[in-house]
Amino acid sequence: MWTRARAIELCRRLPDCYEDYPFHDPNWTVMRHRSNQKIFALIFEHQDRLWVNVKAKPDWADFWKTSCPAVVPAYHMNKRHWIGIILDGSMHEDQIFALVQESYALTQPKALVNKRSSSNR
Image (cartoon, rainbow, N blue to C red; front, side, top):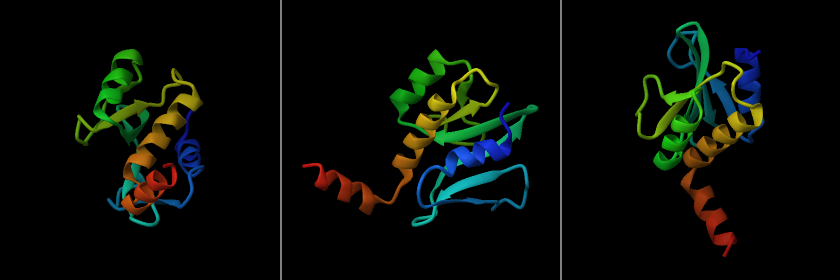
């Protein structure tokens, strides 16, 4: 069973991140990079279910939405670049974590992205 605490802990496996509550609404937990404060995940309840919104490359977002019923257009976000994951138990934790990791990578500071790219050459 997914709980908000479990979803937050999943996100906190990633380095240099923190949880935030910027909307003054306890329903919305925002997970951010510490270095640039960018959001990589939003955890909330909607329609009596726990969701997590994550950023995704558009082609991968389309793939996940067509292959997994728990992945839907993100609630309250850009539907091309963000997906919603309904934490209903139908997806394995490793799949969810992979999507969170991808969102984390897409929103990390550009200096880190450029540094990692140049070190792989």
